[in-house]
Length: 172
Image (cartoon, rainbow, N blue to C red; front, side, top):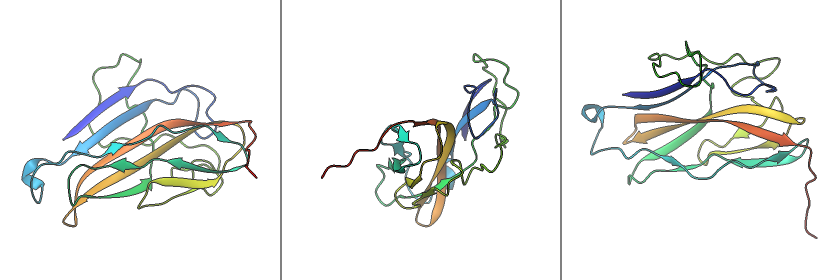
């Protein structure tokens, strides 16, 4: 099963994708006939993402929890989806999969959305690295759910991260 929402536009002025880029948000769930055992409650992303300071070390928490005992989660940076044929924010007829990727600009990619070598820990969902210059960046994290070694679902958190002109303070 795929649940999807598509809309015409992200905000303008993004550093790593073009202006007027559309967006698709989806969740893919295998039917119960394909589950190795039981039902699936799906993972839940835990925390909002905070602002990070330009040119400073940072960590972003994209972790999730899964209430089903024995399920394991594997995280990765992944393509943010474009909005297909959506023409306005009230678009209510989303296209079916497969979905196309947004067009990343310059040296930015889905695996390097900040252009600075930030990495994600595949077991924790924590992104760390050195923040790029001031601006807004599209970041998409996928979490795959495994049960008894079988992938039973895939979910993504796609959002805009603000890199601000701030000062990192350190306690003595």
